[in-house]
Length: 400
Image (cartoon, rainbow, N blue to C red; front, side, top):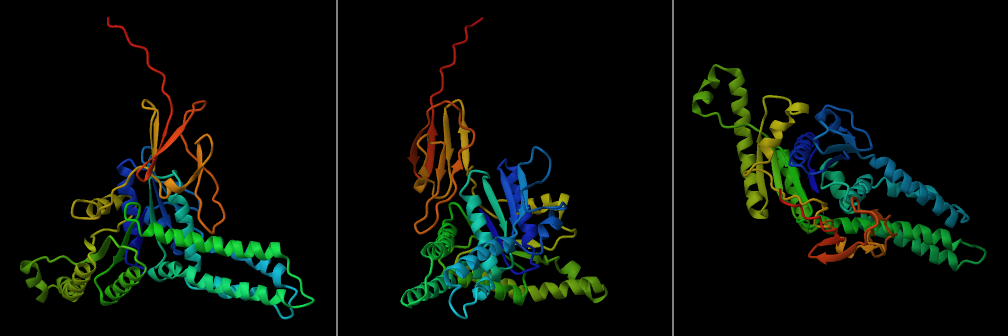
């Protein structure tokens, strides 16, 4: 996964779309996902993107895009939670099941559900790379803190349950309460697993997008400090909208050219902020990738130019490994998926299920492209799983 986050309006959607285009052009099955409520992906790609994968480009380009309806995902979860709360504690005088609204309105809670959907995509073989265009920085960061907030709320529920069980004349249905606790523990465990995945640079590249203003730098520095406390590494800081140095021949015309004067003033305003970014990069050991202000609108057909600017030897770096690679001649399928070595497999080795301690079991994932009727064997190789089957010997061709 390649994740981009930053303040609103700094160019996250453009950088994300250009990155997805780059990987798709390399032949990797790529999904561009956005949880930004503004749905900037539609404008950037120049097409209408829905809540299911939408094909982007021609038939030969393995690129899809989708928007995540994070609010809907959160509403569905908290709707079930409120129903279980009412069933478990509704007989208590003065009990108000809508107390969950405080929890659902916790900043970043909807983004936490978007992150869980991203996690699911990363653990499947549907795509080789998922490019995630997040909501503005604050929402994403608060989502990573959701388990702490949920644990506090869960403790309140367990205490309430214990008190009620000691009261005479009140009865709570244990199955409903158990389901309530299971749901919360499941969600907490999944976000914790996602945080673990975000700490693995072999599978995830986390990148900040900013602009060379004082406010842009301050937001970026806060994000770096927060990620350091979470022990989540950041690979790049993309600084967008940099005014290039056009040299003295151009700047000397500022006295009689208002356009050059305006540009020159912005150039000098940016320099101390760029210096702060370089210091931050040096101290935190994060690569900086600069993007100059473009003389065109970076969208639709012109995204290729942005892609080439960002992804080159001096730009962004991330090695993508196909999530599944099948060789019919060798009778072998190699799966490179996070936590694949910890997955539970079916007896015929044709599907697997990720298992998390404290979480409800995931739905099984069927491995695509395996031959029918053949016995499949499985073995581990590092952080990969290799499935094998016998291949009939081809008949020797006689020489003419």
